[in-house]
Image 1 (tube, rainbow, N blue to C red):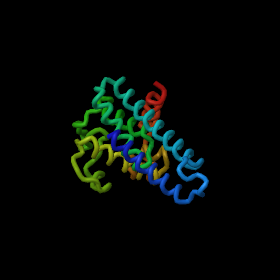
Image 2: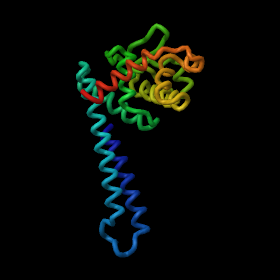
Image 3: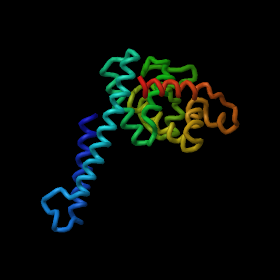
Image 4: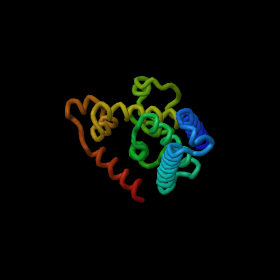
Length: 194
């Protein structure tokens, strides 16, 4: 996974450098122009930040007694899908922890048929248009991240978290509890500040 991410970053950098070279004056031909240096520095900073976040996510799961292999796998998937749907990766992990009771059991099925790491209902998966088994971590985290993004776009950051857990209808009607939100915020604080 990481090799694919870094390969993508390198390709984007090369394309950006090529585009910049086309507009450079002759003065910088064959040398790194200042804008190239800024682009490279920005890309490097982004790659370091992604790596730092991924490491923090994996370290938290390991501290919760999940194996290093599973922790690395899940952290990589969280980074991938949270970036794709522009949601907070720490929030995705906090939801996984809350929804599985800290077990991170991908085979978990709740009393209402909510399934997997992010406890997704099959109807939610269908609504989000994502195919595959909800027991598969990549499918589950992708569906959960997409649904979280949808809820947050519709209701805002905090009420989007509530809607993810208690349903859009309860948020619309005002018939919800904030206990889940407070639980998620406590978990996120523990992940960010070990």
